[in-house]
Length: 406
Ligand SMILES: Nc1ncnc2c1ncn2[C@@H]1O[C@H](COP(=O)(O)OP(=O)(O)OP(=O)(O)O)[C@@H](O)[C@H]1O
Ligand SMILES: [Mg+2]
Image (cartoon, rainbow, N blue to C red; front, side, top):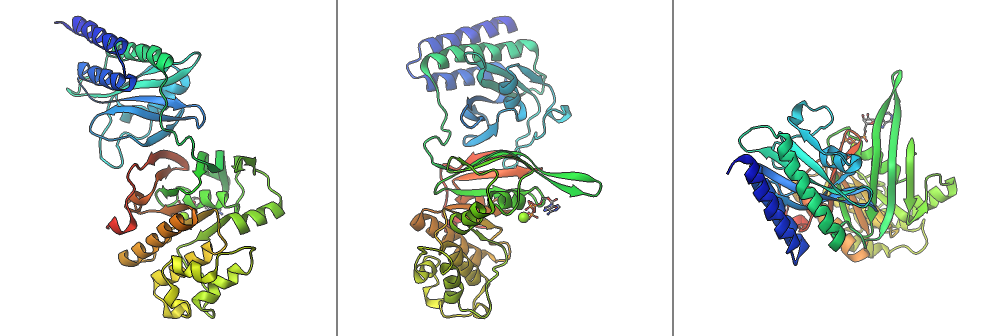
């Protein structure tokens, strides 16, 4: 069989598979595999756009890297660009194409060299795309390769529009805080420093969210904006569906007092007060706090309540700080590098305290860290890079703090 006959054969195969499919998912997944093989490629993905969140989700993926659980913003990366613009792309060498940034998967080291990607059209705009990566021989993709990809996209379009296909997009989860297109500039020298560059993010009730990213990428700035401690330069924020982009001083104070709590790397306990008094001090500022001893118990410190900070270890002091943060029953607890100053064993104690609070109080935990190992505990992991979210990954099997090691 020559090349043309081979392609015709592949098209015939995928057409029959999709026409005779009883289960669309199985058929699409297997057609994708057929096309990847026909194109002698290393990997391939079918991405679907979720219109509610404007993010794209990999519904089928074959290749050496498991990307299930990752989501990307429409318009970002190659797949995101194809879905936004509705036009196919051939990228011969990702490293030399200035339109796209990452070519190495941070976790697995998989290197993307070349890509072809074709939009799957919906009624009037793309609903997803078919993407195939790296010809194994190192050859470049040619237009006839792209044509095969487009054929699969066209057939998928018919099948998906007929039968429907929805990715797991977190729909059904209750959104507490919603950020849209948040930017933050700081004056710097004679210009401005763009620290956040268009952040779209929802925080769900009772989730454990970890934010990872290198020093200086904007993690603390992001959390300070969500916490109302800093104002964004642009974009909108809503809290439980209500616009909170321009709150009054009074609304902001109430929001900070009732809705959120913060834990930082430094514990900031009052040295002249015992653990119980440090917690009680905050409990007295709000209506309907948790009983102080219950807060201490949930961080495992009921037997240290009468100790002064100087009599406690770093991990114990941090747990008092957590008890103090949760005594006002916040809806969301933000923790900015809470274990950065602690050794491994005490870090695990502190992380276990977060786990327990989330379980018993239903609190959402948003934890910032440099340590990718901690991300294994999270329901969702967000990576920030240069002021943008570079990926969001859902963890299908989060581990407990005691299973972490570093
Ligand atoms: N008030 C400010 N004025 C000017 N620049 C600021 C201000 N706050 C932060 N920046 C700058 O914004 C960038 C992001 O800072 P941010 O503290 O958010 O980073 P980060 O990701 O939390 O880093 P780290 O992991 O080191 O804590 C840095 O370049 C920082 O210097
Ligand atoms: Mg920081």
